[in-house]
Image (cartoon, rainbow, N blue to C red; front, side, top):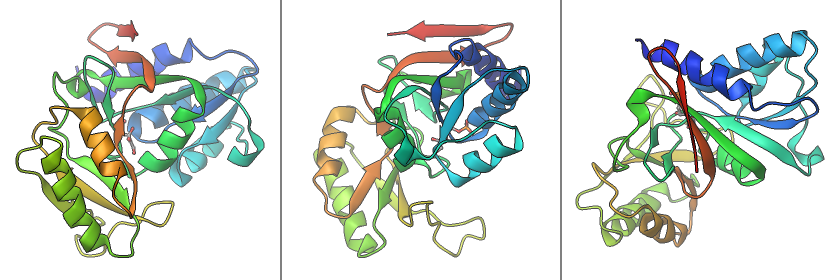
Length: 233
Ligand code: 5RP
């Protein structure tokens, strides 16, 4: 079955967690956009929810689908954040940020009572790290910061990291996030200790946020052939 259909199965299953009156964190990426389309249909049928978008793109897609939005600074409680991921391991540790939205995604997930992650089967891994780890950094001194990111990864047990500035589709201009930062993609092959990497990266001045989500997701929904598998911690 195609990844697209598995994502749709996962998104449909995530919808069953949504209740009338909830404030929702709205994730970013293709799976989150499928979820928004399905959520929009429920809103048209009378479901009363409001969403806090984690990217400009998500805000646009939510609006196109009729999902009401609320300003993040007018919210004091978010019931559920529903988002995709680039990798998920057996402890529900995630790599996110393939879509360059990791900073806002992590702020909103952290402020939510529950984070639900929707993925297709290809995202499940035994050890994180095949997908390059996105690290959002201030633009000032980013080359220096990249060197510190390399050192921190080595110190945290990654044997030969390769840290590259993410560029736009043209391959020339650096990609700039919604928050005005650059992204460094750190190819690691394997991340043996996600917590050690988290701690090491957090010690770097200029490191704004990284794409390891630890102790945030409590529900992972995997779209599969025929159905969706719901896993809860
Ligand atoms: C964006 C993300 C996305 O959730 C992640 O890249 C997965 O995307 P998709 O649902 O398109 O596979 O972290 O920053």
